[in-house]
Amino acid sequence: YAREKKWADEITPGIVVGDAQYLEANGHKFLTLYTEAANAKAGLVIVHGIGVHPEHGLIGVLRSRLADAGYTTLSIQMPVLAVEAQSDAYRPLMPEAVERIKTAVQFLQSKDYKKIAVVSHSLGSRMSHAYFKANADTPAAAWVAIGMADDSYAGIKVPIFDLYGQKDNPPVRKNAKKRADSMKGKATSMQTRAPNADHFFTGQDDVLVKYVKEYLDKTM
Image (cartoon, rainbow, N blue to C red; front, side, top):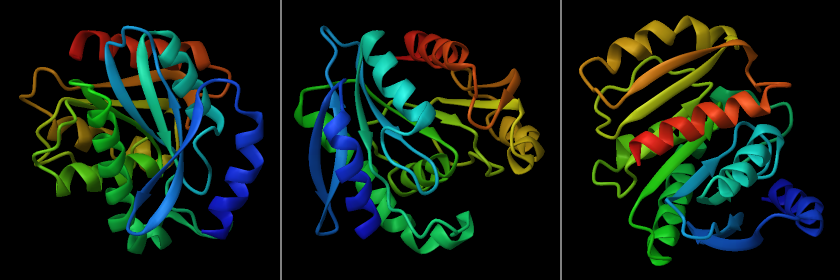
C-alpha cells in the first residue's frame, strides 16, 4: 500500500488526460484514472502488469488513445509488491485483484455503461483471468488479454482477444497454442501474434491501439 501511495503521489499531479478517481475494495482505497469519451461506445476497465501503475507505458497509451477512439476508460491501480517480487509472489494478492476489477466494473455500471470490457496486460491479464473465473455472471461483455502467460481460457464465457508479440516473453509464446486451442469453437474469440512486437509493444503504440480498437469495434 505504501508503494501504491508513492505511485499515486508521483503520477496524479501530472495527469493531463482524464481524472484521478479513488475507489474502494477490501477496505482499501485505490487510485483509478477515469477518462470519459463523448457518446462512448462502451466503458473499458484497463488493468496494468506487474509492479507498476495505471499510467505506465502501454497502459497509459491504451487508456488515453482508446478514449480518443470513443471508449470511456477506467485504468485501475492493481496490488503491488516490492520491486524485486516475481509474478508467482502475487498469487496471494489475486483475491484482492479480483475485487478491484469487480469494483471497477461496478463503477462503470453506476455511470450507466451498458457495454463494458476489460483490457489487460501481462500480470494484469492473469489477474483478469482470475476475475472472469470467479465471476461467471460478470457484466463485462469482452476481454482483451495482452501478453498473457497462462495456458488456457477454459470456462470463460465472454469473447476473448488474445494478443501477444512475436518477440514476447518466453512463457507467453510457449503457451500461445494452448490458449488458442482453449478458445476453439468461440467464433467471437481470436488470437493474434503481432509481428516484431515485444512484451511491451515497444515502439509500436499505433499497432497496439489499432489491434485493440478493431477488436472492440466489432465485438462491443
